[in-house]
Length: 127
Image (tube, rainbow, N blue to C red; front, side, top):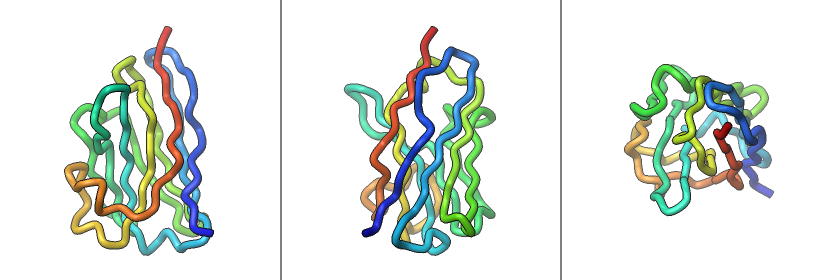
């Protein structure tokens, strides 16, 4: 069974940190570009970051640049999203997604290009 399993969300105070993980099961992640998305209540799902297959190029949304860091460990078929200096406006359900046919690595690439999606994990930033 092909799965992309997320973990690491939770409740954190403003200024705090969280690390999200996405582990691929049933497919070799190193053939796939990976995107991170988030969706807040009543809002469209938006791209947060994209990382190429080898991790040699990463794109970030302007709203998270300098605070979020994406990395991948292809040997473990896992991708990470380290989130620092979290703000209340970062609160959302976060999704990871993998695609072999993503045309280029950008947060502007439509989510429809991604094939495998994580189940989503809630991140709440609140005091």
